[in-house]
Image (cartoon, rainbow, N blue to C red; front, top):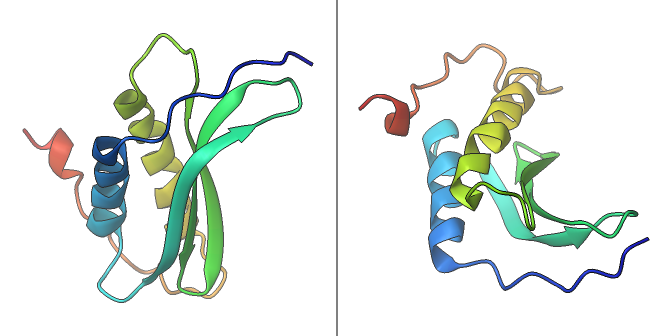
Length: 108
């Protein structure tokens, strides 16, 4: 295992970008709680993950690996794809019949 230094704190702009994804994909009142932070895996790599509780269910999504050669914001597409799957496959069916709204950042 590598002993890699911890990455910097998650910036307000990254928090706001993740929150905008959650707001775009969830209906009012569906978001119970969420958090974002760095997590070190067994190999020592630091990963930026988002934990979401919505509709009584939990989802953990990967956003970025520290040191990757792409900006954190580019990882939002990966997180968004996984979160859309979480909504459409929700066990309690609160999101299964929903037509997902288009991603505003892709409509330009």
